[in-house]
Each structure stands twice: as C-alpha cells, then as structure tokens.
Length: 203
Image 1 (cartoon, rainbow, N blue to C red):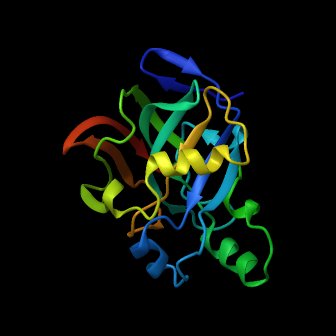
Image 2 (spheres, rainbow, N blue to C red; image 1 turned 90 degrees about the horizontal axis):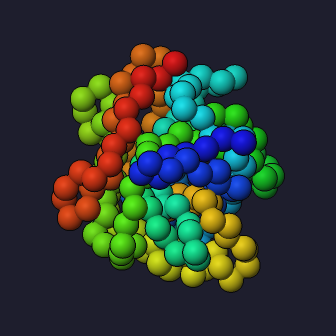
C-alpha cells in the first residue's frame, strides 16, 4: 500500500475522495454546466505515486488541488495534490455516458506533497501550481462552490472515512497538458503564506 507523509508520520490512505467541478472557471474551461449537486468520485490507494508522468497511452493533464487528510472524523492536515487525468479518454467516456474511472484512477494518477497538521480547516487556504516558473493555476477557498467543511459533511452522509483517507477539493481554472521535463511546484498557502509545497519534474 502506498503512503503519504504527514509532518513526521507516514500514513496509508485507504482511498482518495475527489470533488469534481468545484470551481466555476474550471467548469467553464471544460465546457461543462454547473452541476446541481456536489460531484464526487474516488481514486484507490494504487493511484498514489511519487513520480509525475506526462504520458500514459495519451498526454496527461494536471489539476492542482487543495487536499486534506482525515483523522478522527475531521480534516487534520493539508497538502498539495495533483489529480492527473487522461483528458481525451475522459471526454470520450463522458460523451458516451460511461464511467470515467479509466481516465482518473490509473496507477500514478495522484501525486501529493507532504501534508502539515492544521488546527482549523476553515482557514483561508489557497492553492497554486507553477510550471517552469510560471503560475498556471491559482485559487482559494472563496472561489469554491463547496467549502472544505461542506465537502466533509456531504461525504459523511453516504461514506465512511477512515483515518488517513485523503479528500481532494477540486481544481481552479488553468488545467492543461504536461510535457516531459516540465518542472512543477505546487504550493498551499494560508492567509497568503506558503505552508507546504511539493516539487516534481515530469517524466
């Protein structure tokens, strides 16, 4: 089983629960309609990887996200995550009304920074992704359709969250394709101050 680092602890997420279409500008850039209800899907533990891939049967698209670790029924830690997507495959499956797990849950489809402990999940967190020194994605909780605590409450209405599970809260606009050799830096900020970051070079 794959692990993630929470400060000096290594934990094993049993699953990753992801929020789709949680930023209006991202919904618009994909040409989708604003959903009536929260869009949720899951990635398995096997999707977690340390390396960032730019191609797997087709170009891989990045989606930088504000992510939380669940412990004792609450969000206990925050970190940066990349929800990696086979966009062309996802589009084809959606057009046919088919599930799109093949485009979202492949091995290596979830890459995370380390996580840091937090005391307040309602703080003003923001997420930023820089590629080759240029900011390509940036957003904060005020831009979300559903805020972190709302997301947690909704998930709990139908699903048991185990200690160590990760919740990915959606991506701001600016998602796009990775290229081999891209240098990627993902940061989480609290009140404008970087509290954790991750660095990768796309393979």
